[in-house]
Length: 226
Ligand code: SAH
Image 1 (tube, rainbow, N blue to C red):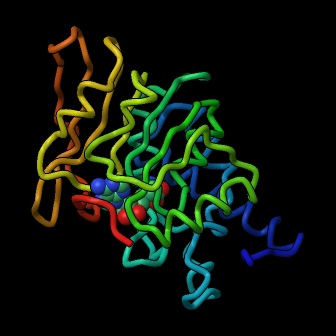
Image 2 (cartoon, rainbow, N blue to C red; image 1 turned 90 degrees about the vertical axis):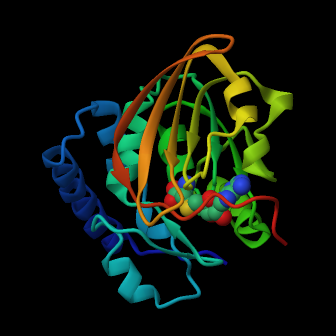
């Protein structure tokens, strides 16, 4: 059902990943745990296998956003590395991810020892990724088909929250589900380009906030889709 690569391919992709990590370092990523995770996770296996596979595989380790089906994309490796680095992920962190997509960011977080709860609103992507992640050896605590605007109150609070789609506003439910002392990263804006917002919860209703530059994400849409 899922794409399999030969041993020689594996060797080739390892080299490509090493080069990608060198590129990420030159772009400013410093956290060695983040770099090690990106060097380990086989990004070429996460694409939509129903589209032109060889062409996509060729680009798996270039710093690009690529299609994963259902009109969605896998985030740029730099974006994944940047968000993960800014969240200061620690072994054992309880992390809520909004926008599972193909599960690449999920796998990077799990690779770093985080306990990941992740939500996807597209049923087809959810169904696929729920099977795919354990198939490639990455076990999330929960993969939920639902609306990320609402978060997962039944599993709150979370040490970290990462939103991987562009939100028009910061959902209040997510702020409530963050632990005091916890951090959240969310791309904010409705235009072509969004600002990456970093938040730290300093008290039940108090937050520190920083704007960390511009990024491009697919929109965070309201409600589940069939
Ligand atoms: N984390 C992914 C990014 C996928 S793109 C990666 O590693 O590449 C963003 C994803 O967010 C898409 O799959 C999209 O369907 C999903 N999404 C958009 N709005 C959502 C919402 N309200 N709740 C949950 N997922 C949502």
